[in-house]
Length: 171
Image (tube, rainbow, N blue to C red):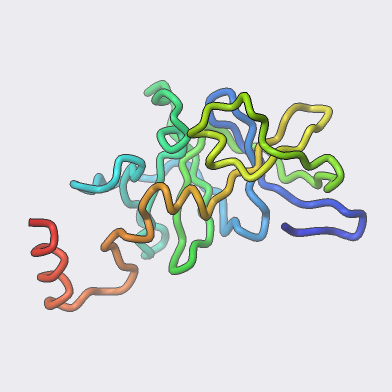
């Protein structure tokens, strides 16, 4: 959590369906418009596909699906919030990007008990602000539940032996 001099934290904020969410600024690499997506056969349900981000192959997670929300209307493309993960960058697909907010740390509260369990498991806490309830997305837990840590994708070329092992392990 990035704490400023006036005891505030900075969050990149965004919307997914009716939820107003935030990710700590230091975890965000960049925010970009929709990019062409390559579907990955046999990928976990929440993996929407792969995007090419200036030569780097990045996994794109359908954050709506991860939160148990219905699919987005087909007429609006998703935005990408590219975050840092342990090994590489990962893109989170969201509906709308909002502002970077300085949020007072004294407004932080635990996750409400009345949230659906799937959403509650991915929210690290909330900030009760005048403009609404800001839900803090736990990106580490989101990636764990999306099974990104176990995906065989690599950002550097694989050797023929590695490719053979990956193909054989799926049969």
